View 1 (cartoon, rainbow, N blue to C red):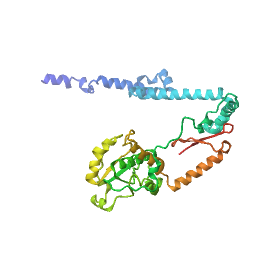
View 2 (tube, rainbow, N blue to C red; view 1 turned 120 degrees about the vertical axis):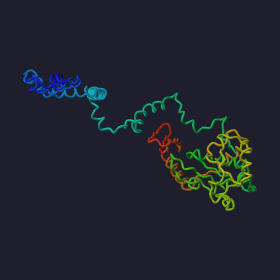
View 3 (cartoon, rainbow, N blue to C red; view 1 turned 180 degrees about the vertical axis):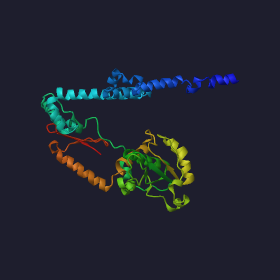
Amino acid sequence: MSMHGQSRLSYGSVASSPPSSPPSSPRLRHGRSRKIVCNGTSNNSNNPKSNKKILNFTERLVYFIVSTVFKRRGVLLFAPLLYISGMLMYMGSLSLEGASGIGGRRLGVDQMTPPGSRYRSPEVFENLWPFMERDSNHPNSSNALMTTWHIKSNQSWKPCANRSTSLTGLSEVSGSNGFLIIEANGGLNQQRISICDAVAVAGLLNATLVIPMFHLNSVWRDSSKFGDIFDEEFFIYALRNNVKIIRELPEEILERFDHNISNIVNLRVKAWSSPKHYLQKVLPKLLELRAVRIAPFSNRLAHAVPSNIQDLRCLANYEALRFSRSIRLLAERMVDRMVKNSSISGGKYISVHLRFEEVGLYVKLANQCVVLVLFCV
């Protein structure tokens, strides 16, 4: 053991020399050599060739970026950015070449013209007017639009319901099997259809119809009630001989449900249900509870129904449903304005409802006696 200890610590000159450090791992050696190369401070730093390469700042910057990207394995992030920037530069150069080359003399005009102005009605009218005038003056041309107001010999307007059912002198509806409450959902057109269907169902069940409620649509966000859009008093009066209609439930019915309409049972009726379904499923509940609710009520009655039920639909749609006074006055002013603006055509005009799209077109066809008006809502 002593000989083993002396062999490690003594033997003269060997003891005076500093102890040798343990050999470094291959990973550390590799890192040191790479660090020396990157910093440019190795043993051969006095080499003029290496100093000459490092002195160039641009080369040092490029070398640093490339080495950093590959060292941190960020090539997957750097490559897409490089590709996108190159494509943007390429597309920008193409657009500049196209603007200066092909349309160079129109570049100033296009910059002064607002975007989309070439599609506005004045320019459309100017471009189309020569063709319309040429077609109108052609001896063999026939204006198809003018035939819109002509009724063909084998066609005539026929009322869909017997209007005598709403005339005075007939007795009002007496007796009732209960109260029907419906909730008209959807847009204004869907609500109109629901009201007409509700009148038909109330007549089928011999029920008293409560003035329909309008469901607050999440798209339109219109809180209008029935009386805000339609003439409520006239609606009740026009249907008095066919269906009994009231504005609100009687007090004794409200007391049974704690003055809360939501406590009234809501019958889930499938879409396009037949009259037989209402007689078999809804009528027994109506007789039992004296009040039922159907919500939603959009498209809850089939199209194919007996003629007496269809007559109630038509009566509600074409006679009983009338807009409120404020809406009627506004509509009359709009119609008078369109008739005056189309005086050259004898007061004939066409109106097209474009929903809520932000477009409008006013085309005046003088020789063809038509004024086309497209409204935006």
